[in-house]
Length: 299
Image (cartoon, rainbow, N blue to C red; front, side, top):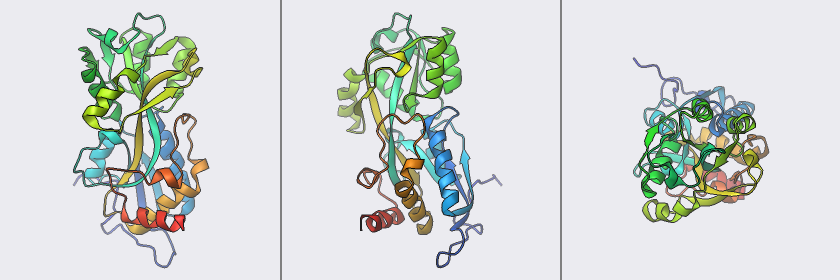
């Protein structure tokens, strides 16, 4: 039998009685790759969920990102999962616990390269996000909208940064917070630039809806002399509908009450850890337990 990392809904489930003891034996969070926002956030969340006593064990699972996480959630191999909003397919049998942050899709080139716009990448080899990541989904849509025909590799963050420094790829796509530590370190030994992506916001929104936002990477990030317009995509913390109500309520309460402790270093961008923003998860419905907890917190 395939090993399951999660036992919710099985004999491993131990429901809390009258607030005594943990709600479940084990809770797993599908996160992302080393050096990325998802893993940093999930690790901080796991610490606070342990403090809250929601489970006897809270573990964080390294993955490629959004697409991997959605697959694990569908296969019942994780309890919670982080995903970019645009990686979620319609009709998915999932629920949201909250909209937590906004990722910035960044297209990174060497500062000494001739590439000034996305269309300049035609005919080159690039890293279009790690396999299994939400960045790969967004990058593919963006390149199609811009009609850029190039060879697309799918390298993890660290390998993509090394390939860019070595001139083995012309550009790399990454979706995360700013500044991303790996890219900040890269900029200190190999100067880099972000290509502006704002021109492609309108065609993406016409095709895929308002999930994409116009956001700016501030001046000074990666030593940039000015702000750069890129694409913002909300992150959702997701679960399956059968997640026990007690778990959903504790996780939701933690997102609100411990917000200041859930801010990774790479979270310069929009943070949605407040009651007004967390509940905005359209088109994914809130888990019933999360909805009840938000209603309770709104008072």
